[in-house]
Image (spheres, rainbow, N blue to C red):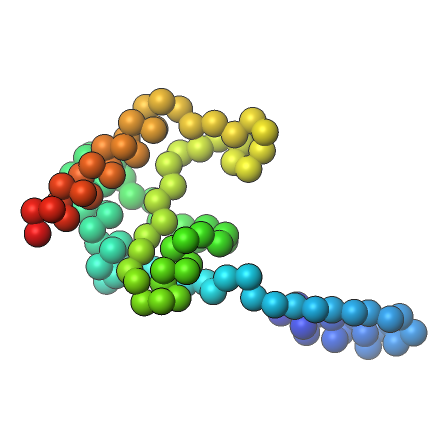
Length: 113
């Protein structure tokens, strides 16, 4: 159920209540699939490095949302992080090195096209 529908249902349940709701879109979502060129490039580079791509929705707003909104192909790449968005968030050095190798591989492949 969408937020507006829930608010409407609550208003019906509690007609004496004064309920204000102001909703706006923070960012536009998008969905990637295996036919997307940027997704194909990233997956190929990960495979070349012996890494296994794990695709899943992020549920957040990133620069990728803005790029996609303007028809710029983009994939948000996250490295293995721990305790994300907390004071104890960290990334291991090997995961950071893998991320750097991925960036290098993507840049080299792009330069060779």
